[in-house]
Image (cartoon, rainbow over all chains, first blue to last red; front, side, top):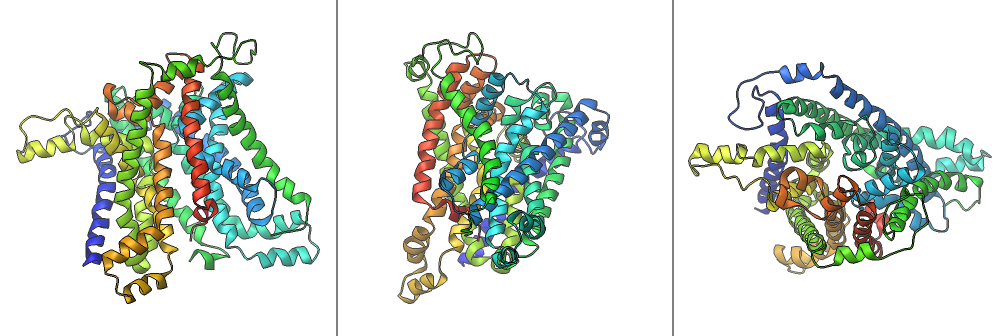
Amino acid sequence: VTRGLLRWYYLLLLLLLYLPLGMLLLFSINEGTSLSFPLRGVTFDWYRSMFDNGQLLGAVGNSALVASGAATAATILGTCASLAITRFDFRGKGVFLLAALLPLVVPFIILGVSLLILFSALGVSRSLWTVAAGHTVVALPFAMLVMMARLVGFPRSVEEAARDLGASYFYTLRRVIVPMVAPAMLAAWLVAFTVSVDEFVIASFTVGRDPTLPVYIFGQLRFANRFPQVVALSTLTMLVSIGLVVLAERLRRSGPGEAKAA
Amino acid sequence: LDSRRSPARLALIAPPALYLFVFLAIPMGLMGLLSFRPALRGGIANFDWTPTLEHYRATFAEGGYTRLLWLSVGVALVVALITTALAYPVAYFLAFRAGRRAPLLLTLLIIPFWTSYLLRLIAWKIILGTNGAINSFFLWTGVIEEPVGLLLYSRTAVVVTLVYVWLPFVALPIYASLLRIDRSVLEAASDLGARPWQRLLRVTLPLSAPGVFAAYLMVFIPTVGEYVSPLLVGGSKGSLYGNIIEIFFGDGINWPRGSAMAMIMLAGVMALVLLIARLVNVRRIVEEP
């Protein structure tokens, strides 16, 4: 009985989770401009007109740029940090791990305003670079979670064999470790990319004149007539995000060391 | 662990450590410094001022923002409580009853968490709006004659929206802690005559407590600083502590005051983080089963 009950509960919760997303999908093909019932009729105009909106496309490009940069930096830094943590003993390891994972729990508004203070103290004018720098901080723990989970399950005997056979650590890193964890690194990159693309709070404090997509969307919320277009675009990015995460999940589970993950 | 002291160790630690120092530690340090400064005159790089506690005093003073701080804490406590309570049965189902399909069902649950946060807030704006889904539905069924305007722009709307935002995420740590429970312990409880509910309350629940606790705090802490959902669905009466910080760094420019308010929140958060670090082994949460 409990099993059936629990299954229904799971399905109900899933329904409640997906219902609002379905609502967005519905309004992205609704003819009326206001986001309210009754629905008017089916149209794909919002999807079509999206591609004529230069500002919007610019924001998409900016976000892609920022997210690629932040994801690449976070993946490289995260791989270094994860290797250090899983493979070496060093003083202050606990503090280091705590500091790296801190952005997972600190309210983003604190990170946002403190970065704003840093950049104005340094006299750095805000731009996509400053957003990417901030996003790297928050994407780093996500990349590390993926990498550390993988490195823990990774057969250390192979890299020890390489070391015993006289390979330097960097040679081992380049020729043995990186090729073996490459799928996990790609997964970490995708997760970090997704985190950056969606991030609004830190971006809103560190962004310059060129908006990232969430900053642009937030700015458009005041103009009711452009709203459906924003919803259409958001629906598209939602589908892309979901695709990326599913891909990342598959990558994370593939490659050597899978026995641990299974 | 590699006992050989190689330059590799330093080369691996230095880049992330340096990055975190420059973009995490220094900014927070600067924020702390700024919070003791009387005013921002002369730019941030100006050090010609005498420290003052005025901004902290003003925050805690009568008519200050203490009320909003407690309100934010209250909202975060409630949101974290509801989410954890709603997620526990799902995590339990996935860990013990879902069988081989558990990974797939878990992924289905997590996917909404990876869709745009702003977008999910906007979706709730549609649902709760005056002409929104809930009002339209009840008008259509004839339960109500006039749309209820109270759904949107209230603190309840903020709570509902935040519960929705966090729900998929919270199931993860609970699920992980349930998976780590040794099945033979559960069998032993049953063999010794424990009824299912006794086993749940006295064996399963206590053994999964670290995961539940971690899940609770992972929602509670970021929610204390929440300011976007009050902006979108909270209306003028739904403002929280984070909104005031945002205003001080935005239109109502007073960075030192905003810094002091952020520092107060940060102090609370750090105290909680250190508490978690003591109570649960961070690395065990990190290493998913």
